[in-house]
Length: 172
Image (cartoon, rainbow, N blue to C red; front, side, top):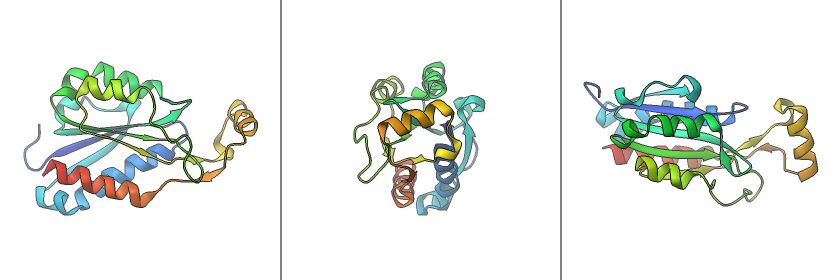
């Protein structure tokens, strides 16, 4: 735990950068919220593969891109490896992945509930993602074409900001 206001880790697993951008925005916006300013909150966003031990943070937000209805393996591994420390902190989870209008698939990733239960997460948010064919591998492009998946950036920045405000208020 830190001296001063709460120190928040935003640990993010992202395959092509869209989810990482969401995590970076959350970490930037948390201290700017009314509750964040009142608390003197600080936040840092880190790629989950290099994320710090959560023991030195007051709260942790873990986010992952979602592929085929699941979180990325590094995110699942981070939560499992640090479960004991995460259970002693305020934890929220977020997912990025549904695409299109309305976002599809509409349901939450099937591995999030067990992970949330494991660490006592206070909540989980699902945000629409981005599907940019210029960053996909050959195999990913073939799958997207076969599925006729909608291309574009479907991220809802107002929803991300609103959730960030909710998390900051819950920390107060």
